[in-house]
Length: 131
Image (tube, rainbow, N blue to C red; front, side):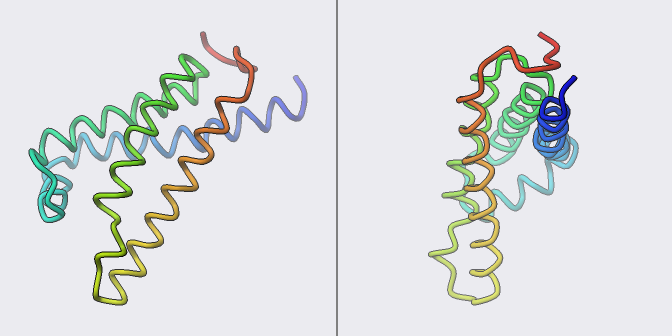
């Protein structure tokens, strides 16, 4: 058990855990999130929140467990790209505070997307993968 393997596992748990937590929130607090999605013009917001919740939950589980890594990254990207463009479209905001908040969330999502894509370069199976 090398230090790098332990740090990589810890990073996977933190990164994937973020998406697992967010996915659970999407599924358990769907009504409030659907209301917000509706205010952003998302069609069928209740279904959209359910689907996006599943995407990030499965993506997070894949990263933490090291299972089906390519699919996990695809699920995360399928969430992060459209959500960033639709929900965090800071370029459409006129209120400076809202613009700043949406820009922060957009940039955060782009950083999360970049990190997800970097997982694709790491040979599988990962150290301490469950599958």
